[in-house]
Image (tube, rainbow, N blue to C red; front, side, top):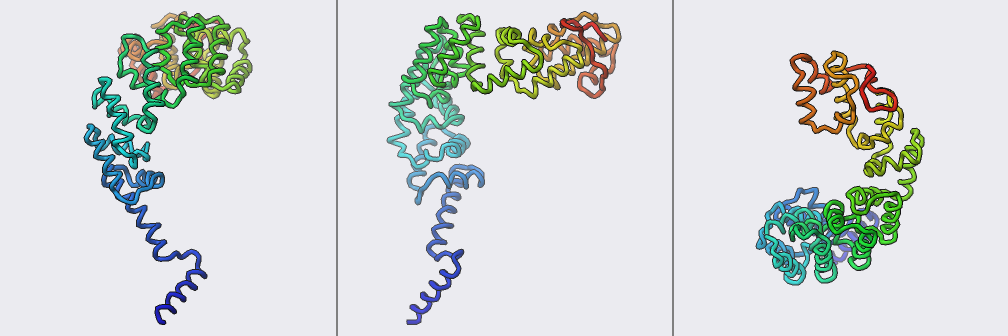
Length: 385
């Protein structure tokens, strides 16, 4: 009777205080997550924060399944760092049946001649491969890659690109896109380059990809040249609305449509430059170097350079050296800005340190140079001080 009354009182108290839970509910809501978190930290090595996130994505009540998966990984030369990264990125692997889902995939890769260390490195970077179907996704994608890679590129190259292409449908997307390139006269070596440098481009919808390739060819790009592939990639990474917005930006800065196209044919990647950067670089060349807006359409590569780390520091050095008569005033920016850091330092900074002690400080931005009007209209020659 006394026990009955206690249970009754506890029930009524709990009902009047909905924030309280029964003892069993408290046990289920705290002990189970804490078990998973503790297990993950002790067996896989992620941080507590990472373990908490992983614990929310998977469910296991005992260590039986996770132990089997971790033992499988260790037996295949994966380090604790590898395992921690793999489980953090792809938690569902921890409750897989290793014999049914993991072992066949490892045997496939190792059977191709891929070494255990190379496989471990790939899985460390992109473990999602192991979550894909071997028969329906991994093998078809791998066979596709081998068909488009250049003959002198081996299995390891294909393995490196596999994670980026494995998410796409081979017969419905990848193969039609490659066929489109071949039908437009793009040689196999260029297709191979695209597969290695920007494999995601091959994964866009086939109708859009076909439209991009056709547009690039109509612009006058040579399908056998490297710029053709660069133009395809540049257009593929921008949506139609973003592309239209880019056109309006350059028009607002004084470029004609012919200048926009001419610049694109010289350097397709300039179209991917952010509007903010374009306006800042344009302002520097027009208002500080005394150039017309059309100057940059002739040298679109400059829009890819860092204003703070390359353009401004180098122009400051040139300004100082010209003011002291060390450099000719008709020096062309197009011969200076593209130089590597090492060559620029050797030719313009190190070489002149004795005659101009402050030159390094100028280059590093510690000594400010005013009045950077070192250009002339419609020319890339540095003439006006």
